[in-house]
Image (tube, rainbow, N blue to C red):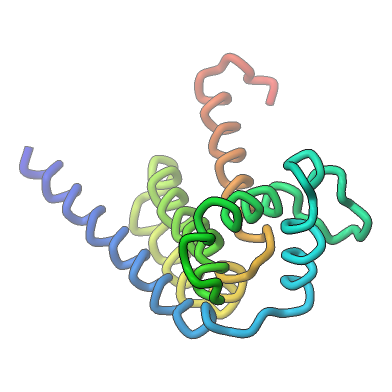
Length: 167
């Protein structure tokens, strides 16, 4: 029992370090100006369409991350409307997805690797400038990473159960 409690405390500490590292790394990037492709996402794909279906159909420029544009549409309509529109408020969904990617990767992959062997690569990613840019971008990059990680994990689960061992 003591061993599991000790392991649980270590996991909480490691996940806290990952979260704090990600937030500290992105704090200088969250206030940066809006780049051209981000402005294009907001002005062309998220705000003008009348419905979610309109976001899906609007592919006039092959630059639309459809799932992210839909999430941003809901964010702008229902959540961000309560706040002053500022860069941190606009970038918050991406930052939440970035921290979720780190934490989900840590907890999902520790089953296949030890928590220490997955912690170091995730920590180095959390403090990298690439993570800071992708986790604060008004684009769907970090959401794609999150979904891809979940899909690979689901594939491993299905192969573990041997129901679909041909995969």
